[in-house]
Length: 367
Image (tube, rainbow, N blue to C red; front, side, top):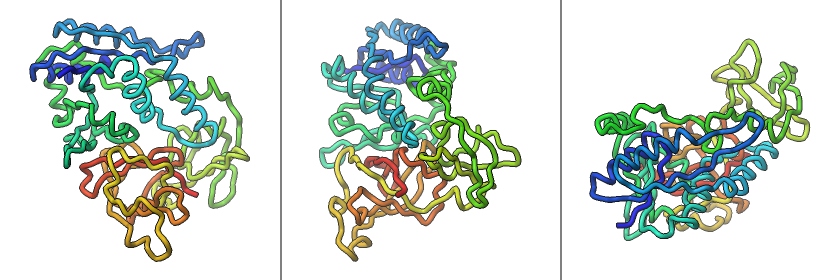
C-alpha cells in the first residue's frame, strides 16, 4: 500500500511513522509549512519542527518532502478566521485547516498520488456496510475527531490513524522506547498557524483595537472597558481584567461594541439548553434519513434522535437530541443537561448515541 504520512515534528506523528514501519510499510513523509513569516515580531519559525521531522525520516530511512502551503492557508483559513472574528463570531481555524489544507490542498499537490494518508491524530475509522465512518479514539482526553468533523467522505475514506487505539501515555512510552528524536518534546498548544504566537496579538495585528464597555448583564452597571469585542468569546472567564470574579462573558452587542458579563461560577446566564446548527455537514451519510427534510407541525418529536455532542474541544460528550429546525435553518440540538458557553461561530460536533461515530458538524447559532 502506497502511504503518505503527514509529520509535524511532534511526538504523535513520529510514533505514527514508527507504528507504520513496524507494520512493514515504508511511507513517504511530508511536512506542511504554513507558518507566518512577518517582520513585526509575529514570525513563527518551523526550523525546529523540520529538524525533528528530518531526524525521524533519517532514523527510518524514509523520504521527507516539505510542502509549502503558506499562501493557500492565508487565502482559505486565515481569511476565514478574520472574517468570523470581525463579525463577532468564534471561529475554529484548526477545523478548517484539516479540511482545506491538510486534506485539501495537500492532496491537490502531493497526496493524490497515494492510496492512503496517515496522520498522528487521535481518531479512528470504522467500516459499516462498505462505508467508512470517522470514529472516536481510545483516549477520550486526546480524541481529536471534533477537529476533523468538517472533512468529507473522500477524505475520511483515505485516512489512516495509527494512534487511534492508543492512550497518550502509551504513545509517549513508545516514543521513549524507540528513542524517537521528538520523544521528550512537549505537546503543541497553539492554533496550527500561530504556533507560539499569542492569539490576541495576531487579532490585534489585523483588526486593531476598539475600546468599549464591559457591562453586567443583570444590572446594566458598567464594570470596565475592553479593547474590542473581537478579543472575547461567549463563555470566556480569563482575560477580562475585572476584580471580584469570577466573571463570564455571556453576550456581545456587536453594533454597540459592548461585552456583557455575569458574576459567579453557577450563574444561569452562562448556560443554555438549546442551540441551532447551520450548514450541517454529514461526513459519510445521514444516519437518520427522516431528519433530512423539514417536518410539518407536530412531527418534530417523531424526527428527534438521541445524540452525543461537543461544542468545544473537551474529553466529555454531552447527551442531547437532534431535530430539524422547524424554520428550515439547519438542525436544533436540545439537552436536559446545562450547556456552558454556547459560542456562535464555533462548530457543534454531533456523534451517535454511543459517542462512537462522528456524524458531522455545523456552525452554532443562537438566534
